[in-house]
Structure formats: C-alpha cells, structure tokens
Length: 65
Image (cartoon, rainbow, N blue to C red; front, side):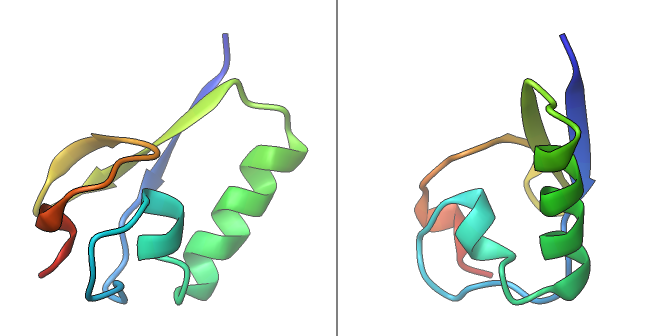
C-alpha cells in the first residue's frame, strides 16, 4: 500500500470543506496532488501545523483559520 503525505499551505479556504478544496488555491498543493494521482498512491493525507495529521477528505468547521 502506497500512502503519500502532503504538507498544508498558507493559502486556505475560509469555509468548512474537504482537504483537497481547502488548499486548492496553492499551486504547490495542486502539483503535489497531481503527482500523487499520477503515481497511483492508494491514499494521501495532509500534514497540518494547526490541525496535525488530517485524513482526506474531511469536513469540519476546524478548516476555518
């Protein structure tokens, strides 16, 4: 099983949303997700300095910072 870890980014959505949508404004995040999808990882997770290890996709009011 291949699992990828993606770093969170400074740019975040300001409403409750999925991990993919939350960081979508970030070019680096989009490139990381594209790479993961091209390499056929089984799953991926976001490492967040604020929220720690976050499973994707998640929805939570905690997404708002």
